[in-house]
Structure formats: C-alpha cells, structure tokens
Length: 268
Image 1 (cartoon, rainbow, N blue to C red):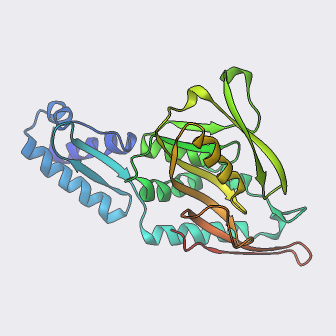
Image 2: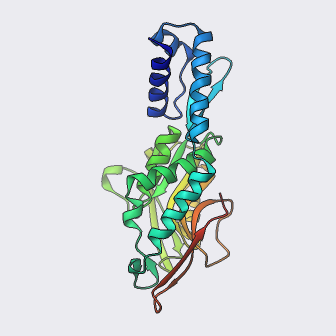
C-alpha cells in the first residue's frame, strides 16, 4: 500500500475508534511496514489533525504502550460553535412558561452534540476516568458522545429505579430547577467501587442535580474528577459545585419582553 493510502487508512481507523490504544504492531502488520515507516506515517497524520484542529495522536512508550487518537477542537471552532448556539437559542419562541428554555432540538441534534462532546473530550482526556455519568434524559446524547470519544462506559442515573436494572441505590436531593426534593437511583451493577467518573449534563441551574450525582456515586466511593455542562444559568451565582466546565451561560430569560440573553462561558 502506498504511503498516502496508508495514512488515509490510519486516520480512518484511529478516528473511528477514538481513545482506543493500539499496539504499534497492529499497524506494522496491517501495512507490512517497519516501525520507522509507521512513525513517519503517524507524524504526517498528526500534522493533519493539528492543522484542522480535530485532535491529536498520543504516543505512549514502554510496556503496554502504543498510539491512540484523542479528539479535540480548535479555539476558533469553539467560538464558532458558541456563536451558532447563541443565535439559535436566542429565538424568543423558545421561551417556555416558568422561565424555562426549549433546548431539546439542540441537545438531540447529532452535529451540535458531536462538537460539544469534542470540547469535553479534549478537556477531560488526561483524567484517566473509568466512567462517563449522566442523569436521564436530555443529557444522554451528549454524555454518550463524550463516552464514545473517551472510550469509556456510559452510566445513566435514573429518576426512578427500573426493575430491569436489578438492585439499585437511591437518594433524595434538592433540585434547583423544580425547587423541591427529587430522587435518583443507580444500578449496583453499573459501577465498581473505588473508581473515578466524569459527569456530563445538558443544563445546570444551581448545581443540585450534579451534587446529587456526586452524592450517589460517593455511596460506591467513586470520585468525580470532571464535570461538563452544555448550558448553565447565571443565577444563582453561587453553585453547589465547583470546578466545572460549561459551554454557554444563560444570563436572562425575560418572559414579559420575550427576550433571551446568552453569552459564551469562561469556564472552558
């Protein structure tokens, strides 16, 4: 196989299996080439990723080492995504009763979800987490994409326990969105004790739901090492959680004047 075709196949396999660690022998045997030739191919492929801002190839040396593709996104692509989302979400017709904003079409749009997931995959790739965790329902597509890009299992915490999940652990927590006590549950078989998790959600107001996720995971002695939310509300200013990443901030939803104010987040 000629060099340009090898690089094309290399890029295709790596991007189709993000964060999967490949032994160098895999590609040497696949292309019937020496390690020196593979190193040159990897260097060129990495230059291509770097130029279009789509990620990078990470090389791990030593026993058990190899190469893997880490998805990413350039700063200019982040700004472009934020601007597009702000334009779409600022439509007054999205205002719902009670000061809520309709976002389902955005959170279920595979193109937007993919690009938002690239942001979080890039930010959390060094954390060595064991799971990506979310709460049903609108956060599932985004969390699933992040899990795919980080090559991690997805764990969905339910609002109500399901018989099909077997034994569960449930807790009550205070939800800022509903201003009341809510419940969440997780299947005991879904996680292992003494591990680490990344929490992904579509929206955060006061941080009560994510704090609830942290609390229920602590029942398994699981540490939350990263938190990513697509949208966060400006108020309340003091959140129940700290050290999180968000993409956009909803400053104001004015029902009377049918106006929405949204700005890019600085927590990236």
